Image 1 (cartoon, rainbow, N blue to C red):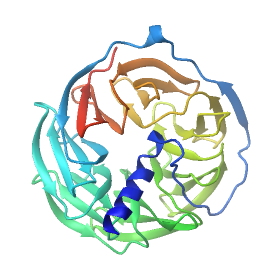
Image 2 (cartoon, rainbow, N blue to C red):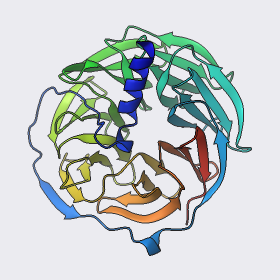
Image 3 (cartoon, helix red, strand yellow):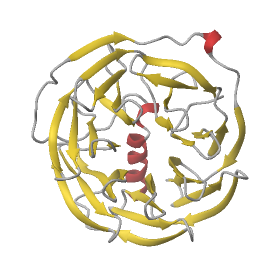
Image 4 (cartoon, rainbow, N blue to C red):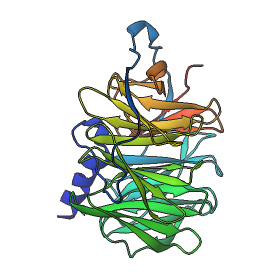
Length: 346
């Protein structure tokens, strides 16, 4: 049963790779349909626009790599290995593994807390969040008291808190709030359905939660820890990301008529872009560009008009990835239990 639960969760967390294994999150106080909603056609990627393979090297990691996080304080990459209860730590100066952290449970999601110099690892088996010190590469605390098994996590730098989505079934769930000073649950935001896709909007102090079982994205205020709005978008939202350069939230959707919804955080208006379904996201803070993985094994710059310039090509599927602002490279979870180190095209 233990292995069945974790493999089921991994199938959900790696949602965009299988398109139909989409995430969900709940509802609350609804504001209904956004004031304005527009539809545009996204740009197409042609063969001539795709650069040659740009993988500099690959780094072996553990079995079942499911999540990745960049630690800007230590210039390290943390990889959650859901198949063997470990987290791999990679130095970006050497691209060597410098530590393998034993967790004793299966990690499915990671978040780096820059305020504390810690990495939070979510385990849905046993319903806990483990706190890893990046100074010692050891587990220094375990957060319990979650309403149900957690499955995703995001760091709120404005409040020094971690928001953790959890659900026991598609019909119930919540987002729990953890204080990083006490490593205790300080609030729980109730939802109507499960939730696995979150992003943090630093400009507004809000957390956006995608409901993959319907057509809603819910907005949580971090000042009140309550739902402030429920936005209606295209059916079955998947991965979600915040673009600080534009103060926009990007949501991938599997609706055949649209691949992307873009939400303006100033008025919660939704723009629908018809394009291939975006994959995972990472933000390039050096160039103020948002990257997304695409179905043809590439990483592209994505805007509110759709996928644009291709910055990297891989030989296989693009899994979760992060941008390392210290050295200007992309670290991608790739098939074969490796992390690919990619230099994006300028």
